[in-house]
Length: 503
Image 1 (cartoon, rainbow, N blue to C red):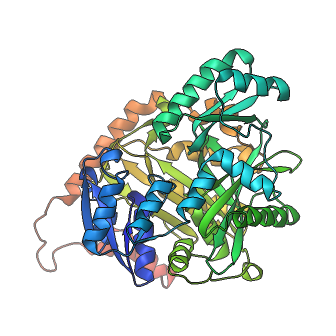
Image 2: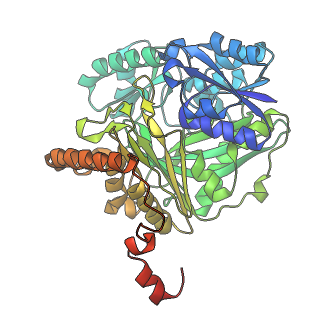
Image 3: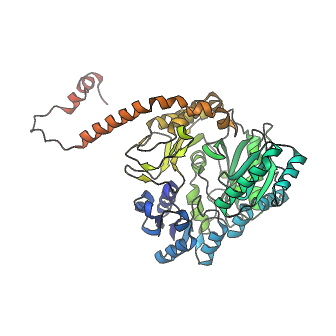
């Protein structure tokens, strides 16, 4: 089977690697600005889709299908984002006689429409947050619901995802403006302005369950991921297991997620997301009918390869492990590395990466598509990669992640690495005592506004560092034979070697 990867960046690299391990050939697609990208270099073949604008490249269904046909691809993996949860794309892939590595178009359509999803899982006995069961006709309909249930409420895009088209409303005076903004954002992001409203749970935790289902009737779950550290409804740190979830709750949530998936005969990888209150009551939020950004933390603790599982399921094979064979070991935490500047309210920081030092060591994994000299474009999501650390305990995983972040050096653009370090050092995070409002409550401290005073000094230091690196790269005249200093003496190591007795 030859697989076309309809995505870019770190997830495209991740999929290409999994395909190679499975012995499958790959086709990369790319826009003009991604011509030199790592996923393009790694794939067996590559096809240019055109201009950098997503609608002219990674969101252009016709161009992607054409690329698959021209290269003789048998299947398409959508990754996450872009067209990954687009039912029309999945249908177009199937209509072209290709395999869509994911659920069916009908399953994506059912769970992609948030109202349809709520109705479907509710009929299967899955608890849902109280809310409307039809799209809102106007702001007045939202106001009537809020008057009955009480404020705050949340306006949400029917076709939403990724934190887009969402507004929290705490007062009747805010309804009309919030409705207009959420509807406009939903239209821009998803092509559908429709909204629904649900009761807003105060300070919940966001916990999700990883699902795998094959075409032979097997549906399994791989435990939970804690995703409560969010900014603007977008996750930035995830971990498994959750410090809040005990074994009884884990089994109950897993069984509930499996029920939700079975309600639509789901196939391939997916994630059922829940909001959880302080009393450990959990409510269905949505189902992501694709691979999640944070899938590596699950892979680390369950010794799984979810992308290879996707590939096998798409080829008609059974899941690799049944539920009773799935065992968790240790703890994993992931930090998303964004090209954003926390000091300018997290504005994207496009540009050229001049220097790159990547972390490593036992229990450290970095999913990325970076290299020195790469241009980070403004046209796409600013996530550069994901840094994941594993340990036998949460404490050891956290220490490894912090050390890996210290080793991670990127110059030429801004990143949120310093911000992530401050989050991981916060006493509430260390204690596992947080919810989805954590960053909002502590943002002033975490952004470290005072750091701006040292920017000039940092810029001078960076310039001096780059000059020294440039000097080191300049060719030097060769030393006469036997005329140069012993490198071990120059490094100050000979004496230590003489005294220490070995390396």
